[in-house]
Structures are given as C-alpha cells and as structure tokens.
Image (tube, rainbow, N blue to C red; front, side, top):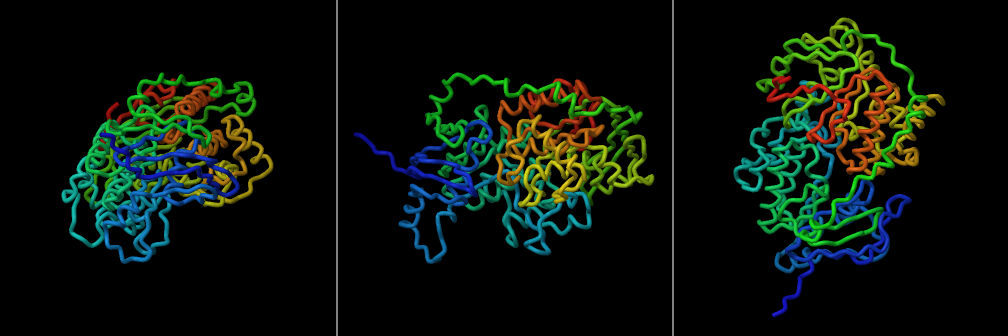
Length: 500
C-alpha cells in the first residue's frame, strides 16, 4: 500500500525582496508532515532570511507560500477571532531579544541597565515575562525542564546572561504551543552542558508533535531532525535526508579568503608604546544584587601584552566581570579594582577607561539605532558611544574604511547595519573595536553568527594583530576551537569564583 505524504508547508517558486535587494528568486521547497529540517550554509547565504520569509516579515513578490498546517488547524477548530492567522500558530526564536521595560512598553533596555540596580528594577522578571499574573510554573510544562528556567524566575530579564536569555526566549516560544517552531542558531551562546540539554529538548519537542525548522551549523544537528536544506547566496544547493547529509564529505575550510594582508595591516596600525605596568588588577572582588552573589572573591592580574581566555558556564559571572573592566558596572567603586595602573574611583572618568578598551559583545549590537549604516557603526568606536550618529572627521572615516577593508567587509560600508548578514554585523563590531587601536581588546563571544570560514578568518586577523601589535587580549567563548593561537592564559569562572 502506497501512502502519500501530506504537505505541511510549501514555498512555490517564490521571489523575495527586502529594501532594494532580492533575497530569493524562484525558490522551491516543501516540508511534509512528520519532517523536521535543519538549514545550513555559509554566513550571508540567506538562512535567517528564509525563516523571516516564512513568518511573513518579508514580502513575497512572486510565487507563494502555503501554510497547509494552518488550513488544517482551522478545519478542526472553531476560530471566531477575525484577525487570527498562521502567525498565531508559529513561534520563532531569533538571535536577539525584544524585551521591554515595565514603566513603558515602548521603552527599550539600554546596554548598561543590567548593571545599575535602580534602573534594572524597571525590567520585568523572567516569571512576569513568561507567565504574567498567573501562578503557572515551569514544572507545569515538562518540555521546559531541560532549559532549567526555575532558578531564573525571580531574576530581572536585563540581568540574564547571553545564554540564559536564549533559554528564556525558547521557553516563551514553547509556552505558545506552536504547530511550527523555528529556531535561528539556537546553540549560539550556550555552554557545553546547555547545548546537550537543548539538543535533547529539541528531540522531545519533535516527539511531542511540533514541527521544527532550525538554522544551525553542520556539526550541531539534533538527532530527531529528519532532513537538511543547504543554502548558498540565496539559492538552495541541496535537499537531503539526515542520513544522506551525514554521508557527505565534510567541506574543507577554505582559508585563502582568510589571508590577512600583513603589509597593509602594518601600514595601518601605529606602534603601541608601553604605558602601563598592569592592565587589570582585581583583589577579592565581590558583586552582589540583593541575595544573588554574582562574583565571589575574584582575584586576577592581567599584565600588558598577555592574551587570556575567559571561560565558564552560562551564568558563571563572565559578563559581570567584564562590565567591571569596561566601566559599565557601578559596583566597581566598591571593590579593589585597578585598571591601567589606577584604582577605580580615584578621579578617572568612564570615558578615560573606555578610550583604552576595544569591546565586542553579542549583546552590544542590539543597541545600535536602526538607521545607522556599517561605516557609522565603525566610526562610533572613536567616541565610545553606542549608536552615535556623529559623522566623524575625514581622517576617521578613512581609517574606519581601511579597517573594514582589512576585514573584508568594505562592500557593506553604506548598507544599514541592521540589514546586513549576522556575520557582517560581527565583523563590523570588530572593526569598531579596532579603530582606536586600544591597548586592551575584550572579545565576548565574538564568533557568534560566523560560519567556519569566517571564524578561521577572524582568528587569523586576531593572531596577525597580536603578532604585530603589543595588545592585551581577553577572549570569551564556549567553543575551544574558536580561541586564537595567541592566547596562552586561562581564567575560568565557576559559580562566581575564579579558577586559574
């Protein structure tokens, strides 16, 4: 007996444009009931754009998308809401949160808010975000258990780490009980244990009957995913069953594009004159919010030209530790903290500190204004202001453009920062951190959103910089293979305590 597959979702010869760019042209793809797809491809290939197209965020100007699952749902449910649509049975979890403050639903968070106790109290707690006024708990939803949400319930959203934020966003999506769950690089920002837990959770979601489509790297495909779609430059390059895909040869990392023009780089950077005996000195540092002890008796000395990896599980205190260094956390004044040979609170301003630091963070780019183009974002690095619209001097513009050229993103200078691929956003923020050529570089999970080629390119840039300049580096990651070769020292945080 032959059984015919039931189509769940179909994209039929669609052409999609966004702003002045064609994202897809004549794309065909269908998902049958019982299938669960992973989407892979190089950075900028259109993976996130495809998810956004399915959810209706981009206009389909030719062809059509048919949500067959929604039609079937309507046939079996008495829906009286005239505005009910397929969007009500889809949940999408992207890279970035859309959290709002309590006082005004249109007021966005600002970057330093999580570290200021007065202002952070305006942010809702995880419990309020997930459950509102109800008395429900994560224990009422077995699918949420692998996310370990319960310990976070009374924490303000703004104080969540990058990985904790991702877990809460996924929990919110699951509470909607969607027919289609779409996840954009869900493993980014998660530590090793959290990645294992999440992969198992995806398997349980699938076993529970929800259709899953996720964007992920070729090496992080949960077991219950049945099919793989590969994209490149907005075109489908392959449709495989899981078994077919796993038999394919692992593509080699092409490094010719990762080559850094060392001569051009040497001409661009100025020699760093040693100015400091110690870059960072922490003595018995402690940070606490109410009853929550975030950092507990941390001691750390960083000397000029040292290269450190800062490691630790989600919520270990890494972001809080960095906020003390970057001048964003007022609790620095209550601790024995010395930056660039000066004790914090001895008369230096926050701008004196920021002038000496180049900073890249996965959270940082969320706070730039939607209208800024990539060159403006890079130029804002001269002023240490997030979202600065200062035009910059001709010399600054030229210097910023040169760094974008070194990093291979010169073609995106005039494009809106929020409209370029995630990988280009990351490299733009790297250029922003480098334009001042500061004595200290802090890279907090800088490779999120980069494919294997781009990660290799990024590492070569860092290693080449470290070989040419007297730079002090702090590099945060959950992936051992992302750590540049130049790194020779490790500080590990475990539940707020330092382990050298």
